[in-house]
View 1 (cartoon, protein in one colour):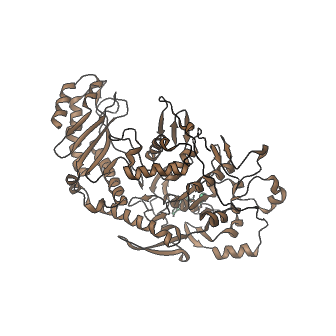
View 2 (cartoon, rainbow, N blue to C red):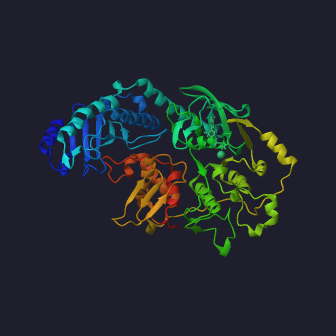
View 3 (cartoon, rainbow, N blue to C red):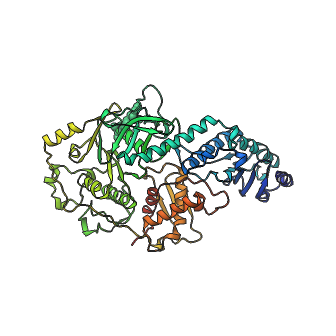
Amino acid sequence: TSNDLRRKLAGIDRKGYGAYKSLAGTYKFDFFTLYIDHVQSDPFAPPSRMRVRLAREVAGFPAEYYRTRTERIALEDYLTRCFAAVVRRYSERKGTGKSGIISIDRPGQEVLERTSMVAGDRFVEARFVVGLPARGRTVLAGEAGEILLESLPEIVRHSLVFKNLDRNRLQVHIELARDQAALRRQLPEMGLVAFVADGSVLPRESGVSDLPLKGENVVPFRSPPEYTVSVNLPHRGRISGMGIPRGVTLIVGGGYHGKSTLLRAIERGVYNHIPGDGREFVITVSDAVKIRAEDGRSVVGVDISGFINNLPFGKDTRNFSTANASGSTSQAANIVEALEAGTELLLLDEDTSATNFMIRDGRMQRLVAREMEPITPFIDRVRDLLDNFNTSTILVVGGSGDYFEVADNVIMIHNYLPRDVTARAREIAYGMRGERSREVEAPLQTVRERIPLPEAFRLQSKDKVKSRGLDDIQLGRENVDLQNVEQLVDNSQTAALAAIMKYARKYIDGKTTLAQVTHKVLQDIEKEGLDVISAFMGQHPGDFALPRKYEVMAAFNRYRGLRVK
Ligand code: ADP
Ligand code: MG
């Protein structure tokens, strides 16, 4: 009980910091249970991992908040934010190192499944850390008692007990998640790949802040009449906005008029956003993948021959590997890998594409003969992707009208607002026949499914598997660079990717394809919860957030030790 904790604390006051280790264990408080899973070894080490668990009846959340996965994730997300907000009022430095710090994983603008909170059938459980207080390297038992015996019950009471929460805000959070799920579900039957609601605020505060831009200069989104659709949502009712149909869609317009901002919002639309974000109803099919050039990346055994052929020195592009891809080969590999993973929507921006991958104009075709140019530009493949893979494309191009000929829709952004210019673009395309000719002999029809080899994933026991920040994973001796995986949005997703790369080894047997391995891991997570990928399952598992299968495969694909069949 909490009295045992009190007694233990009294017994270790002023002792060496290591004496805290004796706190590990389970303590029953009057309305919850505290689990001290791991005690830090010194005041500067990562803080101690703990959990609090309340019986479901004590937490008191209505049954309708647990009915579906969507609702449960929204509830857990809300509770994590709530816990974080309340903790901030109680967390203060009391001594050396991380003394006195209490913290829980901090979600950004997206609502993601996380290990920080579990709203289960029988209990609600928060996973957090505490910096056990020290003066120098000695135990400060009084301060530790204040945190664990006084602050903690208050924090739990004000963040995990339904009757003490702001019911309205919680309800809005859950209803929004239901509406977002309903909208995403409706996209296919409406023939759409993305929806951008009227009134959405797309621009962000800055390049380093994902908060909405504020002020009178913000232009809220307004759909052009040609693309306006309206949808009926369970709570919000009828809303209207721009529906982007399946097919090839160009976003054109002058520089600095807001093209990339729109595309970026669509990229992020694979995730749900919190109330007040401005992108609440920017919803994209969940299989959308942002494609960009990524020179320097490693590529292992990808068939990029649909885009690149006849490389110098007869390098084989049906089974292409390199430790240092060029702009165009990396972009080709990114596309083929996305197809291998099963994407139905590619998102490309001229700002981050390799020019020679996107286009080869008539004059260049005349100067540099087809036989001398290894690249089949994207413009000559984009229809194949639609016809043979059922994969649509949304493409930002300000610089090349050649794309008019292959586009189904052309949307011009002017002063941040879209208008339909499809008819005019067609007129121009047919009035002024392009100088260029199509450069393909055979259509692109299939991509090869690669099978990862187990020897590539053998780790020594001393080998570390961990993540740093958003962009970096260390897997044994190799670093996996995820900087250009643009739909990876949360540090805890990256942490999950590192854990997944280790966990997935049980399915890497030399017979199972990379896509299947990924599928199996995600299935385990769906069945048993995200804790399943943790080495500490059953305790505080660490801070993980769920990545999509595309980001999981992106991590494997960038692992320089990868070997495939
Ligand atoms: P483009 O890709 O067309 O060159 P960007 O999308 O990069 O343009 O946008 C240029 C600038 O305009 C950015 O600073 C962006 O934040 C801002 N911006 C974009 N959309 C809006 C909007 N709806 N209201 C206000 N500012 C916006
Ligand atoms: Mg741009």
